[in-house]
Image 1 (cartoon, rainbow, N blue to C red):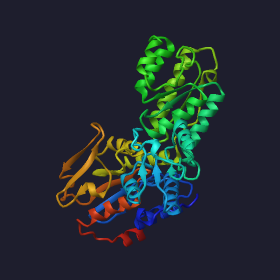
Image 2 (cartoon, helix red, strand yellow; image 1 turned 90 degrees about the vertical axis):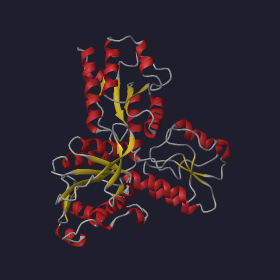
Image 3 (cartoon, rainbow, N blue to C red; image 1 turned 60 degrees about the vertical axis):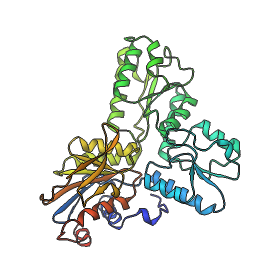
Image 4 (cartoon, rainbow, N blue to C red; image 1 turned 90 degrees about the horizontal axis):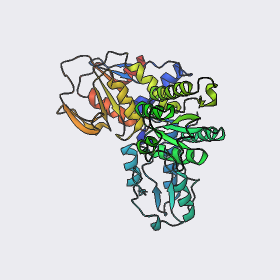
Length: 407
């Protein structure tokens, strides 16, 4: 796999060595069991796969290259390059400015830009409409395009569905930058619809088989279907793709449900005549991270720490998986953990806000067993810092070097 030029301050000696050891032992990535690091009074179960993925490293390399190559030019990002506050803050500190926020709200008017400016397209990609707008100003959209190759793969899959006269069903969050981009590209190829979850898929089923009037489609899915969508005829042939960071199990469940729906409606017809059995369009990192997290659930840990941006979809899903079995703390970085006062500030998955928990560590419990993982946009340096800070609170019987040598 290609090596990217990622700034050293995002890297971790400890995590780097750990990943190298696991890769050497399991080059084909068949073993998803966690790494176990025993420091005596503290033990860490670390996910087999976590941290920067191919697409994120590619985006970071391009973004910092843009800064280096254009010292006298104004440099803009459409919005957050990736969903990680530390990375985006560092780019802002280097003079990069955001044209819009993550919801698409304009922060800098297009009229303020000119052809001498540099625009970095984010890893999520962007809509055809926005890319056309940038090009109309005279700004190059290719040189510093950080769109993840796995997002582009979904766009290609959408084109294939469109070429087969299938309507494209996108499993994703309608407000997410990636889904907005995919919806734009898919709508160019074929009628398209965004589904958030199985609950919405069930509503769609009722409309397809006639249990609900067709007119309900337009009110229930308002803002989520392409222009000119005809629910009377455009739901006869469908195929499913997804936002690459969704839960794999959820996408699979929705696809299977809709396939069964078409079988129910068209009993005598071959299923492929009405349902395109597409391969899962999750990226490799999302698949690897989620499978590795499922293996973490088999451990006997006391709690889990998941590190990443609160608006990171893939990190949110890792925290959701961990929460099925363990008390889980979803934190954006080491600054969220106040070990002196034994308080952790973390994201509440259910209420969608940051909250605080006191006495989250039982100092009398030894060994303390902690699960730790991070999202695909989280620097390894943050994970190491959290581990180091916790270890400092204990009189560890082993050094990091000793633990790694015995791993």
